[in-house]
Length: 194
Image 1 (cartoon, rainbow, N blue to C red):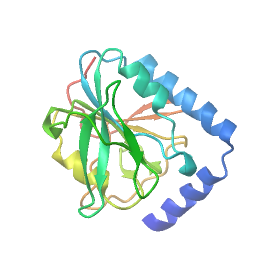
Image 2: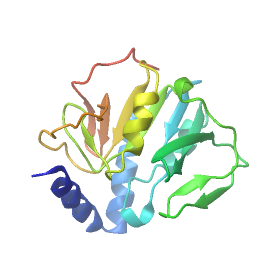
Image 3: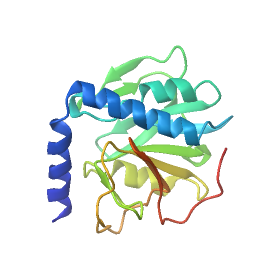
């Protein structure tokens, strides 16, 4: 299968999930994440879910991580297919962008090199940490800008896919969290954070 065929397959599978399944899988992913990582005094990037696309609901995870960490949220630039990042605080105001993605319109800008943990959305991922997103390259560009010691953690409602053929721009994830547990990929691991 081509990357686009795999992408379409996972989009269709996710579209068939009921709201109850999405809630359940998201809760399991959040629980598995927090059993493994609590993190303290870290700068963490996390995406917010596009509910209509049945993405993992990261809002409970973000709330929990904010207790002991600073969390930043992406802001997409569709002209350049890249992202900037803003710190989430109690006064952050949000607006949905043209694709229905909630984004902060207020907040402190973040230097990408200072982000220590990146929580990454995906459609499919393999045991090597190769991920398949929506195909625009936003996260590939972002992950390439991060410091070498940054930890990349993907979230998915699905089991690990068979090998995905990476392209030249792909940056592998270090860990993947599913409803069933956590996979440490074969990607080179940065120094573990706690």
